[in-house]
Image: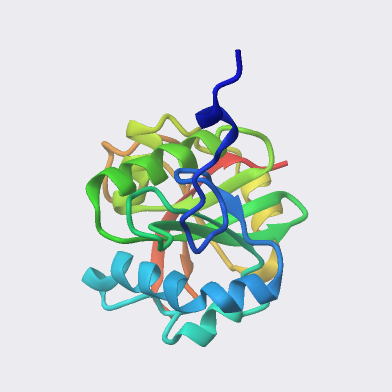
Length: 197
């Protein structure tokens, strides 16, 4: 027997989706409508390191090179609480950042979802530091150790210095560590994780 509550889906969210559902924001009108909410989530997530270098205002959400966005409303208020974003590439979705409202349960939910996604073909990203611990050590996301694959996926956009083992921290797993310049002009040691196609 079908119950009335099964037919009714509560949609009290700016995302026009049921609570807890991750949706892909596929068009620029939706992204513009949600730009302040998404910006606030990113600003909050990166506040301890001085903000995200690519997102200084809500208008930066419209940057054409960041063309993959998903978000979810996971709690009682109507705003999106988490977002993940990146770039569509010939190797799949390259995740480049996150945003969250600071709630520990919402953050855990988002990181669990992203770890799951990055274990499937066509989902990958570059990580170091805390993100490495979260996705690789806790989330079980695989590290890409093959230098040829890493160079192919990153392409000519970045000049990388290949290390293999982490150059300063032998406790870090994997043989896929390299150093490159970031978009902000700083050198970072990173590793490629996930399953690029």
